[in-house]
Length: 140
Image (cartoon, rainbow, N blue to C red; front, side, top):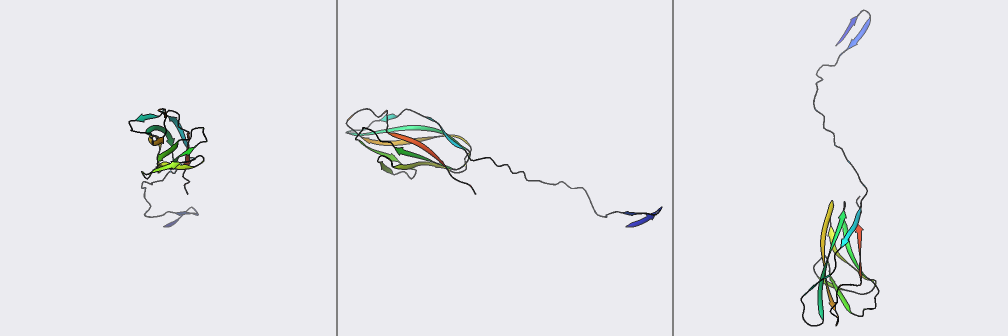
């Protein structure tokens, strides 16, 4: 509707109302993961020369990740197996790695138990020749 009043043109839009608007807020943070703590190895009962042990790995992740165990070179000539994320035991040789846990888009801390079998004549399983790595799963 247009009206002429004192030589000034006025315009108005009919049917315009006030409604609520919804806005999506998207926040992006850099993917981050870290290993917070590794407990001492706890030996399970096992007969013969095969020893079983487990450790608990406490980690933080704000994205998908894989927890990997890598066998380090050591003077121990014993054989060592680790339970993979699929549930099977895989032998670790120096330099080899096995994925022992996976997490998808988790946020916060979690604790994972890692199980080992060690073929050794010695009773000690406290110092396993391994290191832990956490691999961030990239997001697109």
